[in-house]
Image (tube, rainbow, N blue to C red; front, side, top):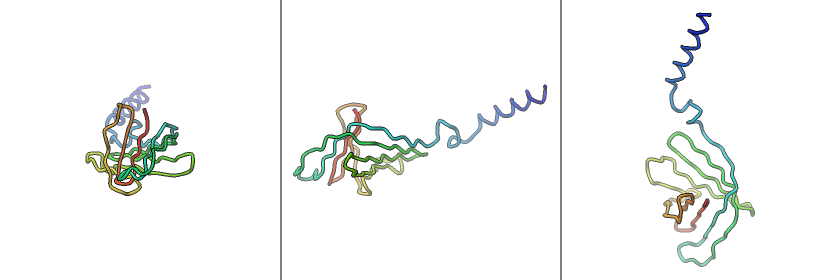
Length: 121
């Protein structure tokens, strides 16, 4: 009986000192969620209208990075990523971009010189 209490105490102590990347709260998320999205191509000259649709958004978050993969109903794919979240360096399909102000806290918008993508909200 004493051995089992000691084992449980040691296990609880070890869990408290696990590195953050091993704890379940810090584990990577690989979640696919359908959300409203707006894709505006040719943002530089606004020659195309905005495409309002529902995208499947897969979020992958790791230690210090985040990426969103959007798939439209037509099969178009966009990858929005920030490899180092401490910096404000966003990329859409590998092209440098920025996160732009949006009209609400649940809406996220990202822009390059070629495209603007907003989702959520």
